[in-house]
Length: 302
Image 1 (cartoon, one colour):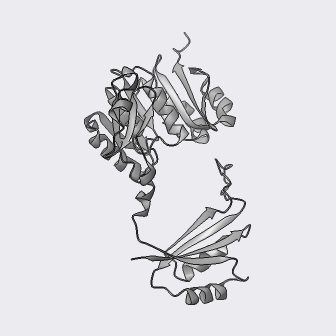
Image 2: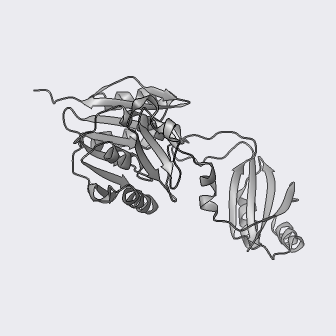
Image 3: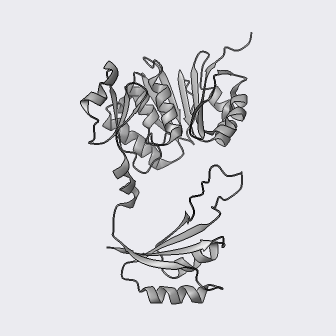
């Protein structure tokens, strides 16, 4: 069944009255969108991020009458309705629509991340005389395909280290992409941890798709994580990385390695300083506005 889509250019107006009015008028979903391509990164604690100019989009049943919707909205609002337009929207599986732009990608020299059913050419796979490692991925509703710099930086790092026989923790595993990649690159076992139930489902399915599920353990944030690992990856954000430093350092024994991502370049110094009491931190590796920090756990002072 198609949907009737209403877009309203709010500009700098407060969106809350419009959201309430749209739902009262029968909207099945209401979404706020950037009206001018202004980026929002990590907001300050306690702040709700919004763009300087906002567009609000609402979906109604395809049989709804635009004239009736507009009359209802105008009766609920204290001001004239801003610039707006209706359009018909064909019914699709929207949460999977973006996958049409997901293509095989290489990270480092040998690691390929490929959407299910797609493969790069044989010449690309074996470029440089390497034996490729192919990770088949369907992220489902979870974050993590390798297209974002934070994930790409971690995949490149994994490709560049020897994971043979290593134990791995992927903290904030999302689609499971990092844990599964580590297992395919030679790790003995991996633990994936995430707060999102959809992420744990996607991680399990991707592990099964890549025939490594027997070596992957999945935990929700509420479950105790007491194991240690030779390699720990945490691709989350700077604020939780700062808050979790004491917990994460206890998961890595002396000589173990840590890789931290989801960090803006402007935040790198603060995160590196937080982990410096326990790790010998290397220089930041940057891609666009994002960085990865990695280090080696020092032995306790005697």
